[in-house]
Length: 121
Image (cartoon, helix red, strand yellow):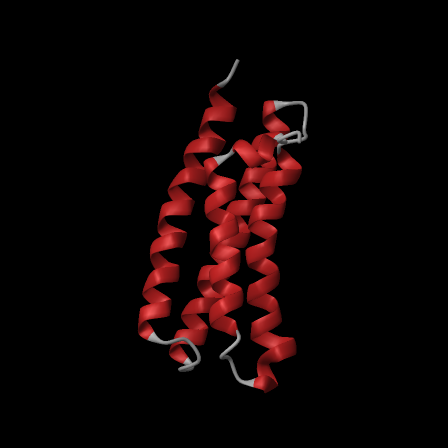
């Protein structure tokens, strides 16, 4: 079976792991948040991995870097929503710290990947 370019990206694997964690922890969010914060943070997390996949299909390094920038923005959206969820007592400290660690690591990967594409001649 063919492996696509995005499947070879370490950052995509980390983003996919973050999606799974977000889905797991948001199961415990209040039911009244299902169409609010729960849906929003899940969509943002999926957007990180999806933009890495979509960007990998682009033909220019500038376009690839653009999609990585969008993925980074979605990652910051995930972090913002998790901060809010934590402050609203929807997200326990241990889960919040785990998400925080994953977003820190992934943000560095995305920045490095974006910069690598922008440096190419």
